[in-house]
Length: 93
View 1 (cartoon, rainbow, N blue to C red):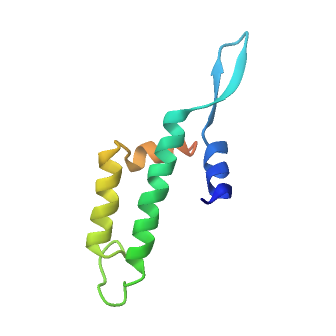
View 2: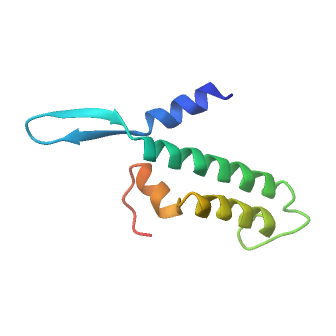
């Protein structure tokens, strides 16, 4: 197990809850799970780029690897917008 990666994902999963009188920081299990699913999908995409010289595509990833990664995200209900928000960004997608 890659303990350092798990720790990093866990740290990125903390959120602040509460109101003006009391706030606390807690681990959001949904956010943590979404980051893990995205990391898995990213590993598949990375493998798909190993062969790019043989099968160039618009995304830079072999289509079957891209499709696999997207299917995993879809299975768990994770999309790119969800991941972007989990990372604490607010760009418009």
